[in-house]
Image (cartoon, rainbow, N blue to C red; front, side, top):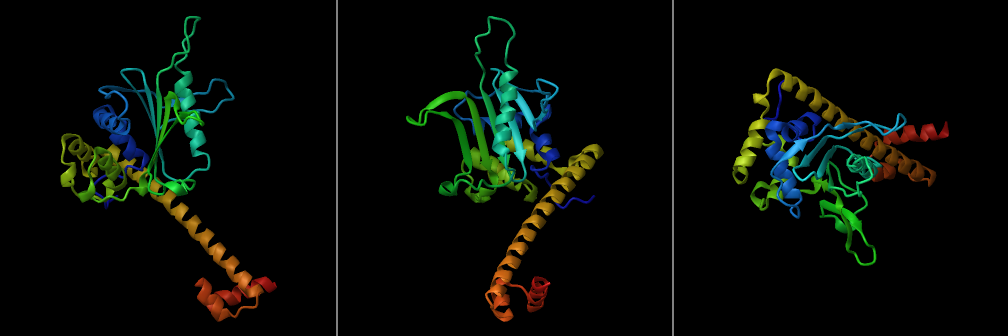
Length: 286
Protein backbone atom coordinates (compact mmCIF):
# COMPACT_ATOMS: atom_id res chain seq x y z
CA UNK A 1 0.00 0.00 0.00
CA UNK A 2 1.34 3.45 -0.90
CA UNK A 3 0.65 5.77 2.02
CA UNK A 4 -0.26 9.33 1.14
CA UNK A 5 0.68 10.63 4.58
CA UNK A 6 4.17 10.80 6.05
CA UNK A 7 3.06 10.29 9.65
CA UNK A 8 0.51 8.00 11.29
CA UNK A 9 -3.04 8.96 12.07
CA UNK A 10 -3.34 8.96 15.87
CA UNK A 11 -7.02 8.07 15.72
CA UNK A 12 -6.19 4.67 14.25
CA UNK A 13 -5.87 1.91 16.82
CA UNK A 14 -2.34 1.04 15.68
CA UNK A 15 -1.15 4.66 15.48
CA UNK A 16 -2.31 5.63 18.97
CA UNK A 17 -0.94 2.52 20.65
CA UNK A 18 2.39 2.70 18.84
CA UNK A 19 3.00 6.31 19.89
CA UNK A 20 1.66 6.12 23.44
CA UNK A 21 1.56 2.46 24.40
CA UNK A 22 5.07 1.03 24.06
CA UNK A 23 8.02 0.95 26.46
CA UNK A 24 10.14 2.70 23.84
CA UNK A 25 7.72 5.62 23.80
CA UNK A 26 6.55 5.81 27.40
CA UNK A 27 8.24 9.21 27.75
CA UNK A 28 5.60 10.44 25.30
CA UNK A 29 2.81 9.03 27.45
CA UNK A 30 4.29 10.60 30.59
CA UNK A 31 4.63 14.00 28.94
CA UNK A 32 1.06 13.80 27.63
CA UNK A 33 -0.34 12.90 31.06
CA UNK A 34 1.72 15.59 32.79
CA UNK A 35 0.31 18.19 30.41
CA UNK A 36 -3.25 16.99 31.04
CA UNK A 37 -3.01 16.71 34.82
CA UNK A 38 -0.96 19.67 35.98
CA UNK A 39 -2.41 19.47 39.50
CA UNK A 40 -0.64 16.13 40.11
CA UNK A 41 2.98 15.69 41.04
CA UNK A 42 5.09 15.33 37.92
CA UNK A 43 4.99 11.78 36.62
CA UNK A 44 8.55 10.50 36.22
CA UNK A 45 7.81 6.80 35.72
CA UNK A 46 4.92 4.67 34.50
CA UNK A 47 4.30 0.96 34.16
CA UNK A 48 2.02 -0.40 31.46
CA UNK A 49 -0.62 -2.77 32.82
CA UNK A 50 -2.58 -5.43 30.95
CA UNK A 51 -5.41 -3.81 29.03
CA UNK A 52 -7.84 -6.73 29.10
CA UNK A 53 -9.77 -7.39 32.29
CA UNK A 54 -12.12 -10.27 32.94
CA UNK A 55 -15.32 -9.73 34.87
CA UNK A 56 -15.67 -10.75 38.48
CA UNK A 57 -18.05 -13.58 37.60
CA UNK A 58 -18.68 -15.70 34.52
CA UNK A 59 -21.67 -13.49 33.66
CA UNK A 60 -19.70 -10.23 33.74
CA UNK A 61 -18.44 -8.57 30.57
CA UNK A 62 -14.78 -8.12 29.80
CA UNK A 63 -13.26 -4.65 29.72
CA UNK A 64 -10.57 -3.94 27.14
CA UNK A 65 -8.83 -0.61 27.63
CA UNK A 66 -6.93 1.07 24.81
CA UNK A 67 -4.11 1.96 27.21
CA UNK A 68 -3.76 1.34 30.93
CA UNK A 69 -0.83 2.31 33.12
CA UNK A 70 0.11 3.41 36.62
CA UNK A 71 2.72 5.80 37.97
CA UNK A 72 5.22 5.08 40.73
CA UNK A 73 2.66 6.19 43.34
CA UNK A 74 0.17 3.54 42.22
CA UNK A 75 -2.24 6.00 40.59
CA UNK A 76 -4.03 4.44 37.60
CA UNK A 77 -4.47 6.05 34.18
CA UNK A 78 -6.93 4.71 31.60
CA UNK A 79 -6.64 6.31 28.17
CA UNK A 80 -9.41 5.62 25.67
CA UNK A 81 -9.69 6.78 22.04
CA UNK A 82 -13.25 7.19 20.79
CA UNK A 83 -13.52 7.68 17.04
CA UNK A 84 -17.27 8.08 16.69
CA UNK A 85 -20.13 9.29 18.83
CA UNK A 86 -21.49 6.57 21.08
CA UNK A 87 -24.72 6.90 23.05
CA UNK A 88 -23.29 5.47 26.28
CA UNK A 89 -19.67 6.59 25.99
CA UNK A 90 -19.71 8.30 29.40
CA UNK A 91 -21.26 5.19 30.93
CA UNK A 92 -18.50 3.06 29.43
CA UNK A 93 -15.73 5.25 30.82
CA UNK A 94 -17.35 5.06 34.26
CA UNK A 95 -17.72 1.28 33.95
CA UNK A 96 -14.07 0.92 32.98
CA UNK A 97 -12.99 3.03 35.94
CA UNK A 98 -14.63 0.54 38.31
CA UNK A 99 -12.09 -2.10 37.27
CA UNK A 100 -9.21 0.20 38.21
CA UNK A 101 -10.91 0.83 41.56
CA UNK A 102 -11.88 -2.73 42.50
CA UNK A 103 -8.56 -4.27 41.57
CA UNK A 104 -7.00 -2.21 44.37
CA UNK A 105 -8.86 -4.23 46.99
CA UNK A 106 -6.55 -6.02 49.42
CA UNK A 107 -7.72 -9.26 50.97
CA UNK A 108 -7.76 -9.41 54.72
CA UNK A 109 -9.24 -7.53 57.62
CA UNK A 110 -6.50 -4.90 57.83
CA UNK A 111 -7.39 -3.12 54.56
CA UNK A 112 -9.17 0.15 55.34
CA UNK A 113 -10.47 0.82 51.78
CA UNK A 114 -7.79 3.41 51.03
CA UNK A 115 -7.57 3.89 47.26
CA UNK A 116 -5.09 5.37 44.85
CA UNK A 117 -6.30 7.90 42.31
CA UNK A 118 -7.94 6.72 39.08
CA UNK A 119 -7.80 9.00 36.03
CA UNK A 120 -9.69 8.23 32.83
CA UNK A 121 -8.94 10.16 29.63
CA UNK A 122 -11.34 10.06 26.69
CA UNK A 123 -9.65 11.30 23.51
CA UNK A 124 -12.62 11.99 21.24
CA UNK A 125 -12.77 12.43 17.48
CA UNK A 126 -16.23 13.97 17.83
CA UNK A 127 -18.01 16.66 19.86
CA UNK A 128 -20.56 16.38 22.65
CA UNK A 129 -24.03 17.60 21.73
CA UNK A 130 -25.09 18.44 25.26
CA UNK A 131 -22.77 21.39 25.89
CA UNK A 132 -24.36 24.29 23.95
CA UNK A 133 -23.28 26.81 26.60
CA UNK A 134 -19.65 25.82 26.24
CA UNK A 135 -19.21 25.58 22.49
CA UNK A 136 -15.52 26.52 22.65
CA UNK A 137 -14.66 24.38 25.70
CA UNK A 138 -12.82 21.26 24.53
CA UNK A 139 -11.41 19.83 27.77
CA UNK A 140 -13.91 18.62 30.36
CA UNK A 141 -12.50 17.70 33.78
CA UNK A 142 -15.12 15.83 35.80
CA UNK A 143 -15.01 14.88 39.51
CA UNK A 144 -17.52 14.15 42.27
CA UNK A 145 -18.78 17.47 43.60
CA UNK A 146 -21.11 18.77 46.29
CA UNK A 147 -23.96 20.34 44.30
CA UNK A 148 -24.70 23.03 46.88
CA UNK A 149 -21.19 24.23 47.67
CA UNK A 150 -19.63 23.33 44.27
CA UNK A 151 -16.65 21.96 46.20
CA UNK A 152 -14.86 18.78 45.14
CA UNK A 153 -16.22 15.96 47.30
CA UNK A 154 -13.75 13.27 46.17
CA UNK A 155 -10.57 14.00 44.22
CA UNK A 156 -9.31 10.47 43.55
CA UNK A 157 -11.66 9.80 40.65
CA UNK A 158 -11.22 12.05 37.63
CA UNK A 159 -12.57 11.88 34.09
CA UNK A 160 -11.15 14.04 31.33
CA UNK A 161 -12.90 14.25 27.97
CA UNK A 162 -11.05 15.93 25.09
CA UNK A 163 -13.18 17.12 22.15
CA UNK A 164 -10.30 17.16 19.67
CA UNK A 165 -12.31 18.43 16.62
CA UNK A 166 -12.93 21.70 18.48
CA UNK A 167 -9.22 22.51 18.51
CA UNK A 168 -8.64 25.00 15.69
CA UNK A 169 -5.31 26.70 16.42
CA UNK A 170 -2.76 26.87 13.62
CA UNK A 171 0.96 26.13 13.94
CA UNK A 172 1.71 29.81 14.53
CA UNK A 173 -0.86 30.07 17.33
CA UNK A 174 0.47 27.26 19.52
CA UNK A 175 1.46 28.64 22.92
CA UNK A 176 1.25 25.97 25.62
CA UNK A 177 2.26 22.32 25.64
CA UNK A 178 -1.46 21.54 25.88
CA UNK A 179 -1.94 23.37 22.57
CA UNK A 180 0.90 21.40 21.03
CA UNK A 181 -0.43 18.02 22.09
CA UNK A 182 -3.94 18.82 20.85
CA UNK A 183 -2.49 20.05 17.57
CA UNK A 184 -0.58 16.78 17.17
CA UNK A 185 -3.60 14.62 18.01
CA UNK A 186 -5.66 16.37 15.36
CA UNK A 187 -3.10 17.08 12.66
CA UNK A 188 -0.12 14.70 12.83
CA UNK A 189 -1.18 12.72 9.75
CA UNK A 190 -1.66 15.95 7.78
CA UNK A 191 1.90 17.20 8.31
CA UNK A 192 4.92 16.61 6.10
CA UNK A 193 7.54 17.99 8.50
CA UNK A 194 8.00 19.02 12.13
CA UNK A 195 6.62 22.52 12.74
CA UNK A 196 9.17 24.96 14.15
CA UNK A 197 7.25 25.31 17.41
CA UNK A 198 7.42 21.54 17.98
CA UNK A 199 11.15 21.13 17.48
CA UNK A 200 11.90 19.99 21.00
CA UNK A 201 13.37 16.71 22.18
CA UNK A 202 10.06 15.10 23.16
CA UNK A 203 8.24 16.02 19.96
CA UNK A 204 11.19 15.19 17.71
CA UNK A 205 11.09 11.70 19.22
CA UNK A 206 7.36 11.51 18.51
CA UNK A 207 7.77 12.49 14.87
CA UNK A 208 10.58 9.97 14.45
CA UNK A 209 8.42 7.17 15.86
CA UNK A 210 5.40 8.24 13.81
CA UNK A 211 7.11 8.26 10.41
CA UNK A 212 5.53 5.51 8.36
CA UNK A 213 8.53 5.02 6.06
CA UNK A 214 10.59 3.86 9.06
CA UNK A 215 8.18 1.08 10.02
CA UNK A 216 9.23 -2.51 9.53
CA UNK A 217 7.11 -4.75 7.32
CA UNK A 218 5.04 -6.10 10.21
CA UNK A 219 4.18 -2.62 11.48
CA UNK A 220 3.40 -1.32 8.00
CA UNK A 221 0.93 -4.16 7.44
CA UNK A 222 -0.61 -3.61 10.88
CA UNK A 223 -0.98 0.12 10.23
CA UNK A 224 -2.40 -0.50 6.76
CA UNK A 225 -5.09 -2.72 8.29
CA UNK A 226 -5.80 -0.22 11.07
CA UNK A 227 -5.99 2.69 8.65
CA UNK A 228 -8.35 0.80 6.34
CA UNK A 229 -10.61 0.03 9.30
CA UNK A 230 -10.56 3.70 10.33
CA UNK A 231 -11.38 4.92 6.81
CA UNK A 232 -14.09 2.31 6.24
CA UNK A 233 -15.69 3.24 9.55
CA UNK A 234 -15.50 6.97 8.77
CA UNK A 235 -17.01 6.34 5.33
CA UNK A 236 -19.87 4.32 6.83
CA UNK A 237 -20.64 7.10 9.31
CA UNK A 238 -20.58 9.75 6.58
CA UNK A 239 -22.86 7.65 4.38
CA UNK A 240 -25.30 7.22 7.26
CA UNK A 241 -25.33 10.99 7.82
CA UNK A 242 -25.96 11.67 4.13
CA UNK A 243 -28.75 9.11 4.04
CA UNK A 244 -30.33 10.68 7.11
CA UNK A 245 -30.17 14.12 5.50
CA UNK A 246 -31.61 12.76 2.25
CA UNK A 247 -34.42 11.08 4.17
CA UNK A 248 -35.23 14.38 5.85
CA UNK A 249 -35.26 16.21 2.49
CA UNK A 250 -37.69 13.64 1.10
CA UNK A 251 -39.95 14.13 4.13
CA UNK A 252 -39.97 17.90 3.51
CA UNK A 253 -40.81 17.34 -0.17
CA UNK A 254 -43.67 15.02 0.79
CA UNK A 255 -45.11 17.62 3.16
CA UNK A 256 -44.91 20.31 0.46
CA UNK A 257 -46.62 18.00 -2.01
CA UNK A 258 -49.45 17.44 0.48
CA UNK A 259 -49.80 21.23 0.73
CA UNK A 260 -50.25 21.42 -3.04
CA UNK A 261 -46.97 23.21 -3.77
CA UNK A 262 -45.75 23.07 -7.38
CA UNK A 263 -42.75 20.96 -8.35
CA UNK A 264 -40.61 23.95 -9.36
CA UNK A 265 -40.96 25.59 -5.93
CA UNK A 266 -40.36 22.27 -4.13
CA UNK A 267 -37.21 21.82 -6.19
CA UNK A 268 -35.96 25.28 -5.22
CA UNK A 269 -36.75 24.61 -1.56
CA UNK A 270 -35.21 21.14 -1.24
CA UNK A 271 -32.54 20.94 -3.93
CA UNK A 272 -34.23 17.89 -5.43
CA UNK A 273 -34.66 17.74 -9.20
CA UNK A 274 -38.16 17.93 -10.65
CA UNK A 275 -37.75 14.35 -11.88
CA UNK A 276 -37.03 13.24 -8.30
CA UNK A 277 -40.09 15.14 -7.07
CA UNK A 278 -42.28 13.52 -9.75
CA UNK A 279 -41.03 10.13 -8.55
CA UNK A 280 -41.93 11.01 -4.96
CA UNK A 281 -45.41 12.09 -6.08
CA UNK A 282 -45.86 8.82 -7.90
CA UNK A 283 -44.73 6.77 -4.88
CA UNK A 284 -47.12 8.70 -2.63
CA UNK A 285 -50.02 7.89 -4.93
CA UNK A 286 -49.04 4.25 -5.03
